[in-house]
Length: 222
Image (cartoon, rainbow, N blue to C red; front, side, top):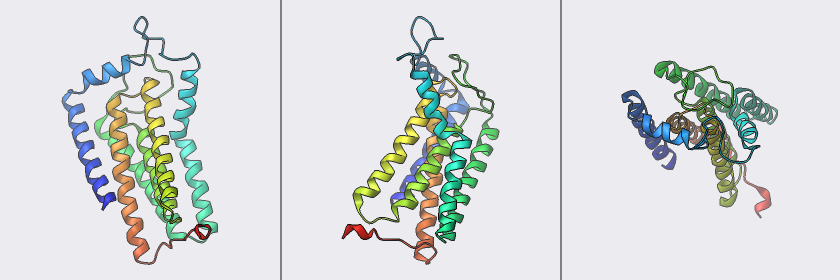
């Protein structure tokens, strides 16, 4: 029920954000937030410590195609070796489908990258929705949902989802700080990613009930 609610609310949020962007109603908000990441005297100078831009680039790499692909391949390889073929197929289908969906949305909206402040990272694709925000949310939340089914202790489940959420928030926020995405791009990416991850979690539950996924109980819990 929670996954279904999260999916519905996320889809609604994405539709609202897409409408705001299409009408141009988000320009003031986007500009204000981007300018807040730079000093008042010089928009070329980012706020914060001198090393913060480097830290932001390191964090944003956690949502890059290369890093996320390596994570997915590592997890898929583990599931394959563990003979969890349906779980492996679910991971690959979820991440692959999420990439296709994100690419299609970028092409559909064709929003140019922000020019409010200088970019602190190299970018080439369209801006809406943020691919880093969307793909990191899809992959980290999907993996958290799958791992949560391997444990029965609530605090371990909470830890997994909190960790996935923190990673997703950090990646998305870094895109705004680096000046390569509007805030609404990132919000839309999170919304689309959560919607897709929630739907995939529902699929995982359905498959488990059909006997496709086996829930392993943590024997250390006593």
